[in-house]
Image (cartoon, rainbow, N blue to C red; front, side, top):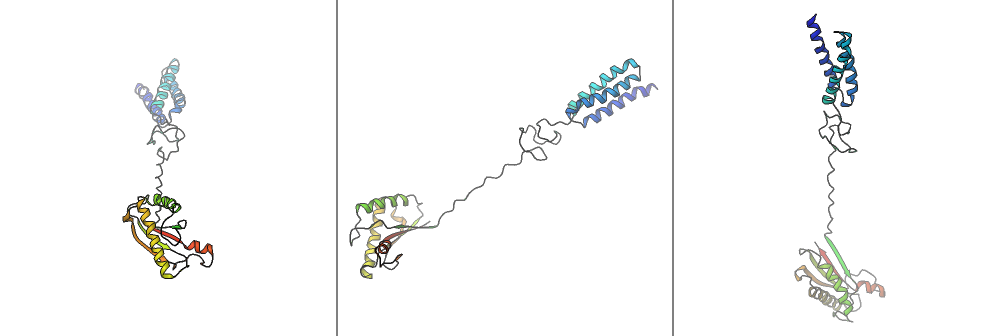
Amino acid sequence: MSIIRTALPLVLLTSVLTGCAGLQKTDWPTCAAVGGIIGAGLGATEASSWAGYGALLVGGTAAAWCWVHGDGDEDGDGVLDSRDKCPGTPRGVQVDANGCPPPAPAPVVEEVAVVKEEVIVIRDVHFQFDSAKLTPADKDVLDTIATRLKQESSSAQLTVTGHTDSVGSDAYNQKLSDRRARSVVEYLISQGVPRSSFVSVTGAGESQPVADNKTADGRSMNRRTEIKINR
């Protein structure tokens, strides 16, 4: 009988502690209550006066065990500490089943579309009458164009074509457009555009109209210099 009295408390205490180990830390009052009831019963096996001491001893032991060994959620992310692979997650942060914040999305890299070919049409350069000589106003316009072209990479290739209206003979307009195109190029070079960037300088005369040569507005549209940029 004495062996049973000695072994029974140990068996019951082990059972209580094993059960408490599966609870959360916040369940320590439950552990204490259950332990206290069992402790009281164990104490009563000796004498009724031992019931209170047994309740206090076993209940306190069970509560402490539950607090130390219980499975809590210290960071409050909803994932128990035994499964939380990222303890200490700041409150309010969304986590996955492992208690870890989801990986940050990969940054979106926007590719800048490079326009391979661009044409600058210059219609505000009028030259002196029946001449390829630039006026002061023409140079002001070309200064802006030069600033623009100097921003291009050194590998950019520039093709310059001069155009006239249909007033005059085809042969004359062909030569005039060629001289005006070259006059534009020489001025741009003098303003810092690399000479090596110009791969072609030609005149198209009146052969490529973009408007009706029968009207003054149409003829004004046709008198132009085009700079094609190939990147």
